Image (cartoon, rainbow, N blue to C red):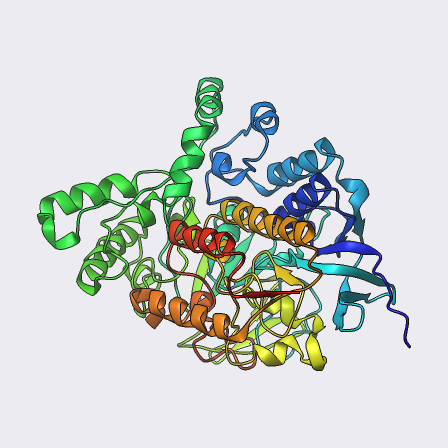
Length: 538
């Protein structure tokens, strides 16, 4: 008879970003033996990697920080309403050190694969360097935008100058002065980079395939009086975030578009366009994201704002989206992004008209001409949500590969588990609430729920938990129903699973939970109250 092996840990957490930091804090609080495996040389996750110029929050800093510790809230002073990457990374390191979590983290640990051991009822995790770890539970805190994708352009390795994806921006300073720079991509990252470097480089050429609707961030320093007000209002701030569908401070106008005279509509739109952060997206009339007429009129309003900020009318039209309405894709927030195109050293190339044919040794070639550059920046986004899972060879019961199960649809139960993969718990899994809300607000919900589940299992002597296929199918149907109400369901974006740089991602897939954070939490609470209905515990 084969001896059943006991795992090294109660739990293994993959990733030391926002989610992994809080999860290991809760696991230690519960007295569980656990470790965090992190590929980087330190904690921070997305804020460790994304060091490109202009990287910063578009959530207000004081809604992005953790809410679980009053001491932490009282002692940390945010310097800006929307903190930049260096400050955010300092904050996350401060949290790790304040709660003595670093000793539970192992860095330089890139996970190559993980298999579920049926006999022992635990996960076996393999690193690229050959090391192996075992844990009863495997908790993935791998983020939703952590699998960077390069464009499918011939000759990527031929360029003799410097080039990299924004996610892998060097840790050492990059000399930009006087350089001829190309930026490929105008998503949220591209917009931040372009805005930040336009006045620092010699020549900047932007290669755009599809423009996005962008709006002003309106960032500013936080003075002492404002900081005191924020610290005294944290309970109210987090309660507002809890009430709102997106987990932000910005609440929708409860009126419907057609119930408001045009003059009043314009008054509201001017007000939210001048306000900070996602107000321009989330404080609109409540039906702007589901009513085509409302969305079209608001999109026309934003288009006029773009035209008013760009001097050249042809350039302005290139920067105005024609294939989707405002807010139906992720809205990048910017600081003088459109004004960058008024500079003589900034040039915009529409690659729909003149496609990029290849990267050359000295730059790149379009259908129209050759360009020479000193630096090429790929702001070409991510294989969102499922990409980081797909890049690890994860196999569940019977040798089922997760990437195969999810090849057509990444189905889960609550975004927390997927059938066939016992004891695999996902903090930011597809179709879950944390991938469709202000991330730390959603992550605290996910971590707390999973931690409560682990306590429940410990108290009842359970060693194994698995989503059942029927409950998973029911959740998928619910998520599909929530999508059908939204205009964004008809638009190609990572919300709907599209990525032209990834094989098989040219069909719609249900990636997020579009029903809003309050509805999602209600469902979590119902499931827990009914002894984790839909999950098989044994």
